[in-house]
Length: 221
Image 1 (spheres, rainbow, N blue to C red):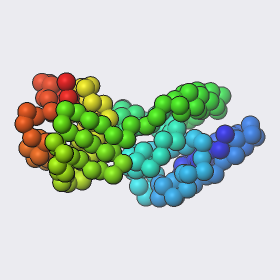
Image 2 (image 1 turned 60 degrees about the vertical axis):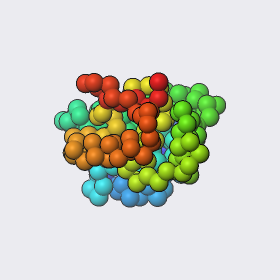
Image 3 (image 1 turned 180 degrees about the vertical axis):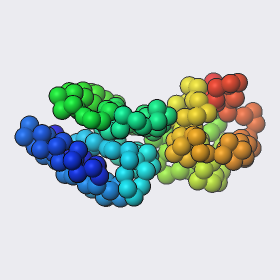
């Protein structure tokens, strides 16, 4: 198992690298989020600290999930706000582990995360979604309504893409804010509402976007 370790604490990083190397898991160790974004492609699994010096670990996670499906296990300090852990899981982390890390538990969680990823490899990724007369190509960002192309802003498309990947399923408002803005707690709800309203108009009537009172939204029936 090739591991990319993203950890700026040299004591923690050195200890993890030594143990994993000794167990036959080659480790590439970087201390900055920017390096993780550049060097993640050769890894089978990422160990990602949330408290990085250059880029928020949550933002690194968000960007990585746009680039690859590599399993990611988040490492977080015991005093970390629980909301950050929740946001990390919503943004695509496969698991998390509190520091100080117990090495046997770390190895067990790494193996479990990798097993789940290997089990799911045979499931094809969704690239096109059709809801009623709306076609959404998640790879090319092309959206058509009744055969006519609809031009969406980046934010409008990202909102639609999150809902399209779970078409027919309720998605919470917080998850939408997390995945589009990277942080539901700092995103401006009024801004989200404006983008959502414009997206509704562009998708036409009857609207395929359904509001689920007190929870969130659903695309399609």
